[in-house]
Image (cartoon, rainbow, N blue to C red; front, side, top):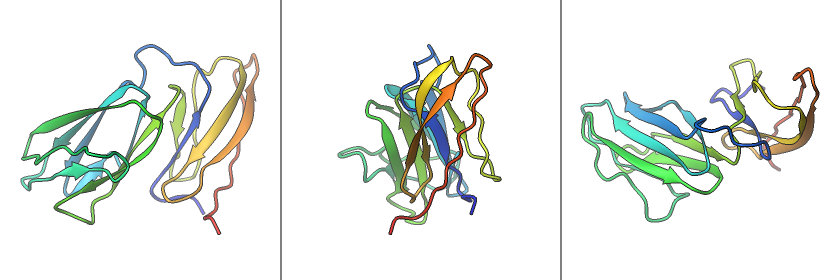
Length: 162
């Protein structure tokens, strides 16, 4: 089963490239978070914007004492995220809304396509811990070694817990 909502595979212990994945923008458009999953590196900043005529109020149960306040049309609010991990995004006004920020410790990641495939480009040779994250599924981590050719394959099987 390929995840329909997407997911991300990232290298936990790869180096940080300067200026990569340090900012992201998530817009609320037609009562949906766009993109559904945004990826930033630790210490990165996400800008939340509202494209709807409706007012939205973004918060996360994963971040204590934080919310955007009321965001009217074309207003934005920013937040810096220092700790790695997934952060679910909700709206106080529209309970059906859901999105994610995934904060990762490196800058090497690939988003899963509809076919479940991903590509992480330009990884320096070495052995890394590759982690697959998909909303509402347990993460899976495995070692992957990138040789001088720069090509390596890591396949994951993600299943619900239980």
